[in-house]
Structure formats: C-alpha cells, structure tokens
Length: 197
Image (cartoon, rainbow, N blue to C red):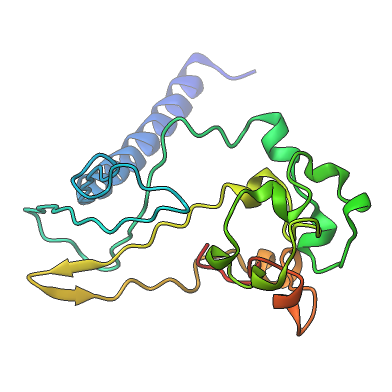
C-alpha cells in the first residue's frame, strides 16, 4: 500500500513531468505560422465545376517568417467522408489492380459504370476510350468525388514549386493502389497510382 508521502511524491513527479512536456509542446505550437484564404467565393472562382473549370487568383499576406518545410493544405467544408454509404462505395480488389466486370462491383453502388460518373470523357485521365456502359475503374462515390483543384504559389511574382510527390503512405503505394496493367489507360479513367490526388 502506498503511503501518503509516497503518493504525494509520485503524483508531484508525474505532474512536473507533464508540466515540462506541456511547456515544450506549447512553445513549439507558438512557432507555427498558419494562414488561410477562402477562394471558392473569390472573383473568377464562383460557379466552377468539374465540367466548367475556372482560373482565379487570390492573395494571402503572411507577416511572419515561415521556417521550412512549409506545408500547403486545402480544407473542405460540409463534406462528410465518414458517411457510411460513402465509405463503403469502393472496390478494394479493383483498387489493387484486379480487372473486374460491372457484376462484380456491387460494393461501388451507386457509381458502377462510366456513365454513373457524370463526367465528360475529355476531362478524364485516360477514359477517352471508355464507353458509358463500361465498368468505372475506379468505381464508387469516393472516386467520383475526387478533388481536382490545382494550385500555384507565387511570392513576389516568383513561382514557388509545390512538391506533390512523397505525400502518399508507402503502404498505400506498395499494396493498396495498383493499375490494372501496362494498358491501364484503356480500362481506367483515373491513374490510381498517381499520389498527387
């Protein structure tokens, strides 16, 4: 049984350790410089859709110095990726590179065929040869709702290169996402090995 004295020593020691760790974390978090700008309602951006792309320019002023590496994120609102129907609407076998027929894609409901995607062929990464009645590869709501905005960053009229590689988990690249074969563009409307999506 711990005595009152030993309990006080243990809890005081643990408390001091947590205070030290907390102080270090607070100091690091205060060094983070964060800036954001909304662009969907900016001039030139309004009304942009998959089949009606628009180019717009927004300015973002950052008064503090930012230490490398600088991370660039986008944020979506009212987009519920944890909805049960959305999460289930995909085929893991198909994403691993297995060529499947429409009959094997029941898990992808309601996006099973190319016509279910509701996109123009010229907007797709390789699907210009795919007919609306063919199986969508990749299929499902997750693939249909892929976010395809592109960004350029300029500082004092000089373009800054945004690195788009090395952002996917190695396990996803090695085991989870594979093209069907060397002629993947004849069967897939999107390159599932492209880690920039």
